[in-house]
Length: 149
Image 1 (spheres, rainbow, N blue to C red):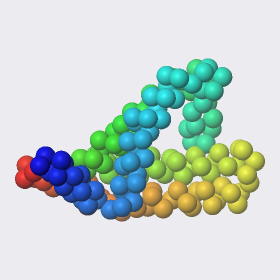
Image 2: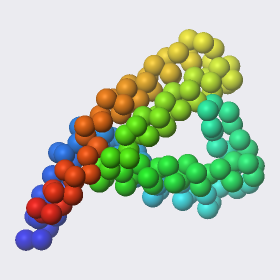
Image 3: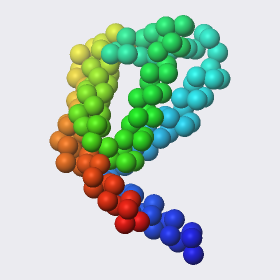
């Protein structure tokens, strides 16, 4: 009986946000619990890299900024799960940083302006969606939902 209740609650969690926000949530969960621990604790020194605003940091500068990325993904995981009000506008702001990073990285990697524009426009889609999602991030709705369950 409890398995049915668990699946019902998972279904309810899935339905309370748009599909695109669920994709971002699962990406944040993956980065928080699978990729970042692997990246931080198993990669050898010669493969330490972090990208900020399109610029690649290597070695110790990368390793020292890595916990910041981990904290951002963890905050995103929690904030989307609970639909916390502080996610707006910060999720969109971080997503816009990714737009800049993808464009700058494409140019620096030799991809040129066309690939930078395509990458930037592609990553603007979730940025605009997150910016327009202000009404979704409402702690009071989430709190009353949890009290009902």
